[in-house]
Length: 102
Picture 1: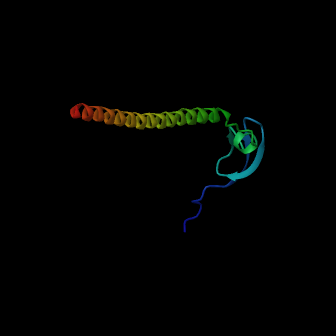
Picture 2 (picture 1 turned 60 degrees about the vertical axis):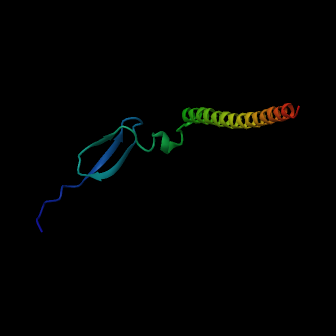
């Protein structure tokens, strides 16, 4: 096995630029600065809000539930029109039969 092929492991302090939190770890890099850490990230702190998405989801559901209601109403109207047209055609046929008998 070759000697000295592994990089040197250093004890480093990681510093968060956003909130200033620091913690120690081991790394091959001399200095680590991060933008967001678990102490200031909204997901980990529980301060994350999803209200903007909730409004979009509600609008989506409202829009498509309204579309479904419209489709059901159209189907009901089509059935009623079919019933009316069949009744009208029966009446016309009955009148035609009565006229033929005369």
